[in-house]
Structure formats: structure tokens, C-alpha cells
Length: 259
Image 1 (cartoon, rainbow, N blue to C red):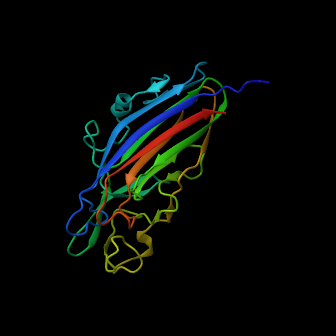
Image 2: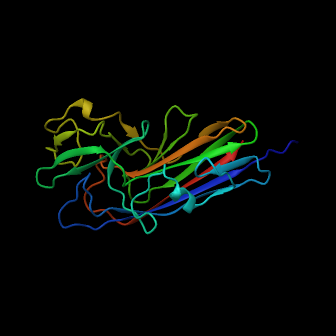
Image 3: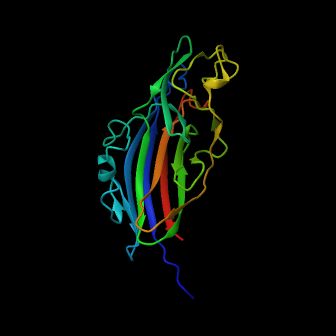
């Protein structure tokens, strides 16, 4: 029987969420006590025949992409202070377009105002795969958000029509559609929805629902690099991103196997 050759890629990003229970409620989009620390970002391949390789910059290919290499690549976005534990600012994310919008809520008027595309406070990393021959690989992520259902991860690959959204199974939110939203949170549920003054349907994007697990397939042509983009963020438009938040640890592991 012909033996099937396999190669496994492992990418581990540890997220630690720490929060302080405030005497007054904390609101979505302004959760000052939420700190997400990216501790380890690395990727490696168990690949004895050298047919599948990984790169942190699409220049140097090897069996491992180290945390230092990933952090050094200018195209990646890591929370500021990543080396010692960066901070995730709650944002609204539309994974299909990779649009992330920062925002804030005024604690007295509960007025939400977005301020354009965020440049920090979330995690965005691209890694490259390259094979010496045509092959298909299966991307099998494991995401553990801990006790924080407003933490999400998205995997985006060229072969998939839609990204894979990982989080607490069944949890969902309506992302802010653009960076010019201004709306009063009249019903005091810490998100923008149809019951709020000034609400317009165009303010929100399509509903996003997370799954606990899933797989994606990537077809690799010989010597042609393909990408896996990883997003991780705290979703400020999720109603559960409010009130006292307990300390939790989340992790993401990617296993990419040559079929």
C-alpha cells in the first residue's frame, strides 16, 4: 500500500486576557480593563522530505517561522508592546474584508463614535506556505477563547470563499460597517442596534457567527507561495464585551497537514 506523506505545521499564539472588575459597568468599545497579551507566536513544520516549507516574510523559507521572524515582518500587525504583553483594544471586525475599526463609548451619554481603521489593538499575521510539487493541505485550527466569548479568531486563505470564524460556538455579533458611525445607545445594551436613536441599517454589516472548530483546504501549486492570514481581536460590538470581565487564557493552534 502506498504510504501517504504528511507534513504538519504548528502555529501557536497564546492570548492572555486580564480585566479589572470596575465599580461601575464597563462598556463595549471602551473596556479599559481588558488586556490581551500575545506571548508566543511561532510556526514550524515536521517535514522530513522538504516538500513543504513555511515563511514569515515570503523570502526565507524553512521548517520553522520563529516568533522573532513573525514580529520583525513589517506587514504584520501586533498589539503595541507585544514583546512584553500587548493590549487589545475592543474593535469591530469584518473578517471577509479584514476591516477593523477602532471605537469608543462615552460613559455618560453612551454615544458611540468610530474613528477610522484601527492600526493597533488587534493581531494580524500572514504566513506563507510553499510546496515543491502540486498538493492539497488541510488547515485544522484549534481555538480556545476561555471564558471570553467576545474574543474571536479568523483564518483567511485563498481557496475559501469565506473566512473561518472561530470563537465560542454560536456566539455572534453585527460588526460596524464603516468608520463614521455615530449613535446613542438608548437601550443600554452596550452595542449599536435597531432600538437605538439614530440607528440606520447601513451602520452595521452582516451578522457574524462563530464556530468552535472547522477546517480549511489550500491547494498549493509547485513553487507558488500561498498565504494564511490570521486575525485575532476582542469584538467590541459583541454585547458580552461589557460588565465585569474575568481573567481568562485563550490559545490558537494551527495544524496544516499535507493530504
